[in-house]
Length: 110
Length: 436
Image 1: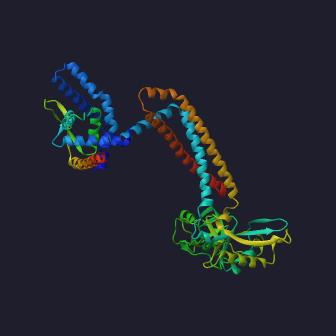
Image 2: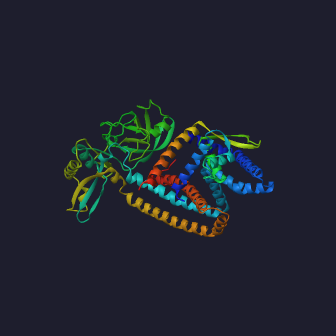
Image 3: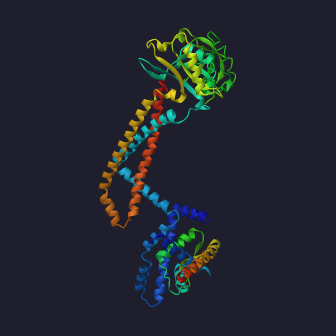
């Protein structure tokens, strides 16, 4: 896999996680279910990619985490966006929209 | 902002490793529990749900490892782990490690020391103002026997140089310092005394920090006996006494008046603890070539002018020792840069040493390459085991790189230390004096 492709995939995952956490805090499983839901099942985020990404983003200061209780009263670690995470969501959304429009135009060109 | 946050995390990961790992463990177990529950809710049996959840998670240990690899400071931690492993390897094979470090220390040390000499003698310019305007005089003789080298000068030559060569400031010194007893008050000490003429310090462009230079009267034969102290002697023997000027000291039981102190970093071609005026004469000492001449080109003059003036002045001498054994020879004089003139005799020796040291380094490299190769062959099974256990090629390469670089680094440090001592030894040897 070329590094460029990896970056693109990583960027996609980050943006999806930020977007999933946009409305409010979620635990790990909640995030992957939410991503599944908002992409209509296109992206199934495996824990092998989800947890490294969550920890990386927390270390980057975009997320913070706390221990809480799940819907059915189980202990779980929750994540929520920080202020700089919200900023990052805006930046990446804008960036992604631009790329997506450019790609769509490029592919439609004859 | 992001860098700050990542640095903070890296520090936390390194210093609270246990706590961070425990939390990760908790988090992943909680995740698997949630997943299991989800599956039970979907109708699976408890055992089956748990199994499916674990399979979906891809194994808790693997999951933990993939998170750890992502963390801030992971690279540092891996490096530290590899470095510790490498150190354990060194302890396990002390023969190999000591051989490598010693080989590196000796070969690098020898090269460092000798290159320092080459650098000081030939590459760096002299530590004086405008070193390109400083020179000395070579004598070229073509006749029955031919030579082209620096000669010492006699009293007549120096007087002509001083009085009839206006393009240059000229000065002479005794050829080497002599050991004398210095008596100051009740204190007696053996010191090296150098003898220099009136303008010697002007040629070097050095100015005493206390007092003054020798005057014309003091440099005349039978003139008043005066001395200029080096900073080191003034500092140690006279405890940096600012009222030293005008005091009398005894050298070889004769009274000398202290008239100046040299700056701390002053380095003279004749290195000594104190200097007296040479008081050059034409007879006695000055009837033979017993002086070392150095010159500085005056502002506005050129070396061509100076050489022409030297040739004119010295061809008019009454006694021409150059022609005594060599009648009918052509004799001419020319200026060469002081650095070249001062180092000419040492140059071939130092270059030979440099080449020898270079070969030592080459041989050392070949030996080490062979040694490392043999060691690698012996470790093939270790590498095979690690590959079989799932180490990536890069992990194994990184381990070997770190091991060898660490060894090279230790050897290099030892080499620099060796070089430092070797250089001191060489300097003592070349100055032929007792070093502190």
